[in-house]
Length: 261
Length: 111
Image (cartoon, rainbow over all chains, first blue to last red; front, side, top):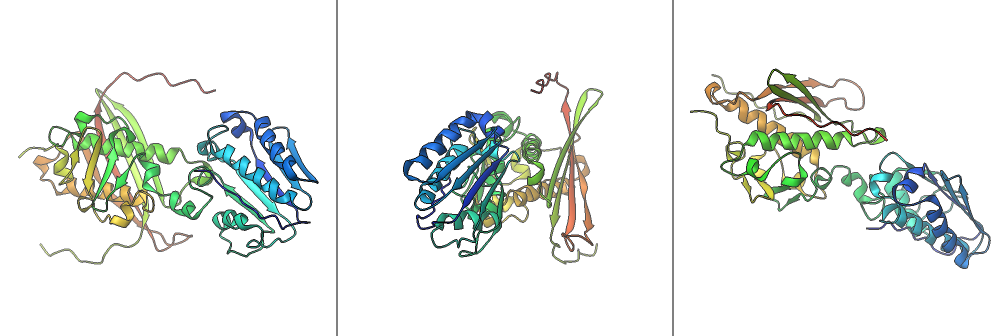
């Protein structure tokens, strides 16, 4: 489940900056920024000459790679950084998903597809560049949609944004039915879900509550244009009324005129 | 006939083993197997189908058979005539649940 950035060794003279903005959140979530710095240092110092690491005040991690083989090893450090951001030691995908921005700037017009094999993956997934496209531009990836969940910021990035597993943890489908764990929706009990003695209103409400919760978990940058869910409670004498409004942007329905009465 | 609350009345073929609920795709308006796929599917489509099914079921009940503690409003459908979503339709489903009052818990103080 780790993200992998593998960059080949033959990229001397090029410069790669990897800048992780707003790393305070990452540090706060599972460790400290110094832990990240440590990992980077270890990796970068392993084989590199001319490598340097800049850790700025806990909010900016910069990796500047100088010459030769150090680039390859430093990218391994990038791997390490990714793993940490993604994994259990420092932060989690949800932390990255909270609006932090990872910016990777690769200067000198280094061609992806030669030595920067994994750079391809990263670039393609984040900004949709074709393999072999120069990476002399910013790669801005609103983490969370990819870092931490899929293998890379990835193919699955676009899909993962809408994958049912994100809405219902443990969800599955065999192509004939959908199965939703009771624990993945809100407030539903096994009794309420019972096939004969249960109540479909309870099941429906639990699903809608989860949909609202999921929608509210999106950061500003993750907000969808095609979906909106809203829930509101209102006390009315002895009942607690809950209103749900769910908006979809849809394509036109079929044009079948209804039957004349 | 009176209101039937069993989940099978809304979703024929519905089952539950106490841990999961299972709903046939065929019981959900317009949902395809591809849209229902756990990884490559689309939860928006699932929610759209769930909302549409609930509305269709409710509106299809005879007045005497409708629940009083749940109401489904007619979906609001507006054509989008400008912007990046032009030529789509903004479709909103509205539901009201009348829940029994319960004593709420105090929210956690923000940190």
